[in-house]
Every structure is written in C-alpha cells, then in structure tokens.
Length: 407
Image (cartoon, rainbow, N blue to C red; front, side):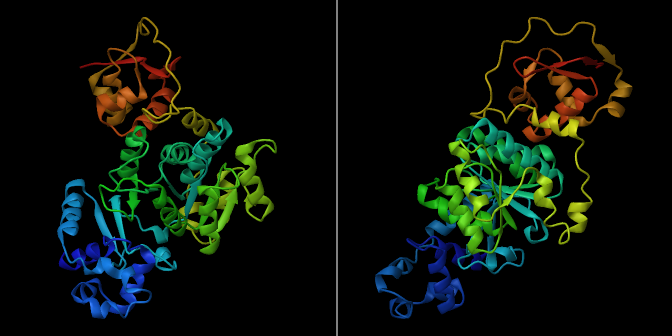
C-alpha cells in the first residue's frame, strides 16, 4: 500500500501526463525514489526545470483521498509494475502508469477485444449497426470495448450486454463520473459483467482534453477498432489514428454515399479499412489466434438475436422512445402457476420480474427500479419470458404478465 501511494503521488502531480511519468521512471526507476529526490536531482530530467515543478509538491493529501475514494467505491488500482497490467498497454509508447478499474478483473490479453467507436449523434442506421455489431461480437466470444457516451458508444455497449459477454467501457473522467447521466444504469450493468476503466482517479470530471488520451487506451486494449458511423474528422478518426500507430486492425461499416454520417467510414474503407457488414466479418480475422474462445461460441439463432435487438434501450437513456399510455386492463384469465412448479419453469430473475408485473404492466426501466436487477439481466429475462409465453410486450414498450404466480 505504501508503494501504491507513491504511484498515486507521481501521477497526480500537475501537468504529469503519461509520457512525463515514463521519463521520471526512466530516470528514478521507481515513484518512491522520485518522491525522495530533490530539485537538483530533478534537473537530470529532460527539458526545462519548470516542466517538472509539480514534483516539488510532496503532499500526500491527494493520494490519501484517492485511496479513500477507491475503497469507498470498490475501485481497484492497477499500476505498470503489477503482473495483471495488460501487456497490450505496456507495448504502447505512452502507456498509462495507473489504471482505475471498477468491476471484474478481466485478463484482457487473453481476449479477442474489439473496440467499437463512432458518432455521438448517429443516424438510426448507425444506432442499429452499433447495437447489432455489439451483440454479434459479444455473442461470438469477443470482448467489446467502447466508451459510454450517447450515440454509437451506448448502442454498442447495450448490444454487447444483450449478447451475453463481458464489456469494458473507457471513461474520460473518474469511474464514478458517468456522462451522460442517463447512462448511469448502463454503467452499473457494465461494472456487473465487465469493467469501467479510467486513468483518472475517482471524482475527476470528464473534460474535452481527456478524450484523446482515453482513446489511445481504448484502441490499445483492443486487437482492432470498428468505426460504425462518423464524419471524416473528430474523435472516431483520432481513435482510428491511434489504432494505426499501435499496429491494430481497422474495420469500418459502409453507409449510403449521400449520408454525412457515413462519410468518415466510407473514406476509411477507401484508405484500406476492412469493410464489414456483420460481426462474423471481424471475428473470422481472429479465429486462428483464439480458436477455443471464438470457435466455441455458438451464434445466436437469428430470431433470438432479432428479439434482443428489438428490446427497449437502456432505462432512462436519451434514445429511448416515448411511451404510449398502457392499456386500461391487463389480460384476464391468466394461467396460474402452482408454487411447486415455479422453480422448474423459471429462473430466480424471471420469478422476481413476474412478481413485479403481478399488479400492473411496467416498462423495462421501472422493472429495474422495482427489482434492483441490472438492466442487462432484466432485458435478457424479458426475452426468455416472451419466448415462454409468460410475458407480452404491448404498445409503449410496456410488459404484461400472462401468468400468475401462486403465493
């Protein structure tokens, strides 16, 4: 723990971006030695002395606060010296010295990780494609990596959660600072099955100048980057440029030639990105490297995949369609399920959801609020309940129980 405090001290000094942290470590080997050095020794560092003035601040107040915040929020701290630090990031010219990790400790180097990026204000086509690719990649055994912003990021993450696989979301602020706020439920689902990751400590607000550094980690963790829909400039293209610098593969979804939001991806295809129309087009590139993980993942039946894609988007999200008013009365004459048969017919989550729907129809977000089951599991359970004929979705994306549980 004492050693960790020195890492937090070094990375939290003013103007101490990743490349400067590496320069300090090249000179002093460990953050602890850098901490106990003086101004004269800092003169050995390259550049002007003023560039390293932050090292003269020896206060441990901020590292102590970061440690306390991480303990309170259940956030793990990973440093360059740790054995579980991703090797893919070590290979970068400017790897993050510290990562804040909330969720499962995934062995990223053992995963066929694919980053999915794109516009924050995509067309309906872009939203559909992002969610479709997220689901197909996840169901096919890949680890989907993205941000958690509105637009393509949120759609890709949502699709990956429906696909049943783990997900990593890279943040441009602390892992407790979710933007947009409407995606807080989505973030909780990511942390439940995957991880929220940042190089910024808890409490750090997302800033515009944080996104470019974040994007290098997003592509760095991945084997390839998929651009779904974007203009020929902006954050998506910057991420693609990081991927090219890092020798990662680049994939792009084609779009209509007259659509502004497809101009960037169409140009990437002209420049050599692989044109893809489904998750399989990407997964086949890595079958030889991850035969067990990818080849053993049975594809979802088309009707199941379509049913999951048609489920409501994440609760409270800005892209959720407006609800119509529910019908006046629920379906009469519901089948009554004896207590002794309930466990054999339904999972625990399905039973909890059926109990929540006993008195009135609810939307998916209301079910999440009432049951406290993560949205990813609620959406999956609702799909299975519909397949079993126990629940019906009606106009306004509200769900009605077609069975009644005996108490």
